[in-house]
Image 1 (cartoon, helix red, strand yellow):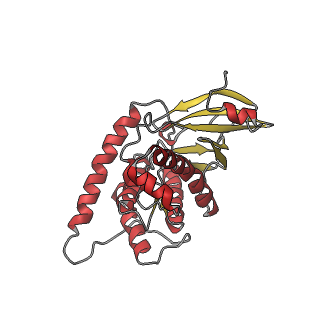
Image 2: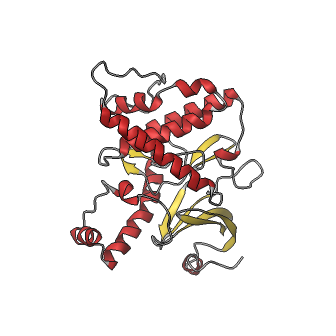
Image 3: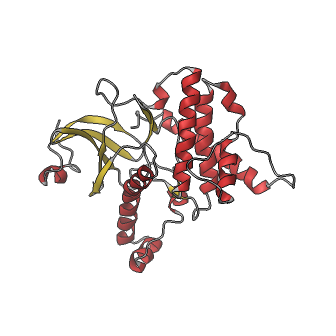
Length: 284
């Protein structure tokens, strides 16, 4: 196919040899399958902020500090330079998150770098070499659902131990290959300690996964993994090898109204996001 304008610079410098086809177009980017030498990879082309429909980006960017005072001031004032810097930081956030969680033992596509708003990364494939399906397009046995859910809980624990919350984790942002689930789409990943919305986002991420796998293994629907994991995190007792039970008893003291409101807000936002996802093209 014709080389998209945004990928042409990567062709010019020899990082991409051929654009094979478009894989998807979603709310934040368009993904193409490309040939790089003897390997087939993905090129994720981020959309400009004016085109990007990702909602409430400010919530996700909270806690992302910039050590360059000039850039920080420009972003705060919303100048043209500041908006450009904000875009570059948004784009680089995903590749940085992919490197970080991969080092923590989470299965994500291998990132090869982000150049001029184009992220080159591994193409996750199925047994036949085609692009792996999303979790949303996969059916499974109760036993497989329990196994894969346990894997996903381990992944969210490992991400949290690395200081990150995915922030938009759902059946639409997980691929499934022969070895199990692979987490994708992380430009909105947040700092678990610095972002005031981190707990609500984490709860939503975990509940999304539990609800999805729970349609195949209904016993998961009564579990409280989000509360259990976050409590261990706050107590400094969370580690990648922790044994989870899915059980959590609320403290005996008065209910935390603030936390309840956060969960309600997160549930409403998730329903809105879910409707938006269903109206879009298949995201990668």
